[in-house]
Length: 142
Image (tube, rainbow, N blue to C red; front, side, top):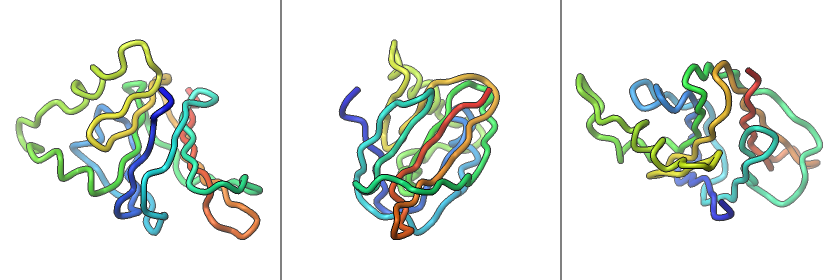
């Protein structure tokens, strides 16, 4: 999938296990650049390119539990597409997982998800020489 992208209209990032994300979504990062950013499946995870300069330093932001083996990234604005979150929510994860087929990465209604291993995934930020965030990575660690 060469047309992968992460849409960040508000710059507020939500990350978590794709199977549970929609019922308990909370922002994990705020103040990111806004826009649509190219993403790629790399090293058993995702890499989102916010700017061209290469990172010179990396920081770990969060370790996420991924019992389903799927992790997802989305902007807080994407949750508006999922309005039936209640006692009997629409199974958004099932809709997303149908997009995977044989791919390791899928995109559905503003959600960018990657298939990995059950266990955990680490969210990291790469900063360029000026200190600006240039990359976001999400990697499975089993």
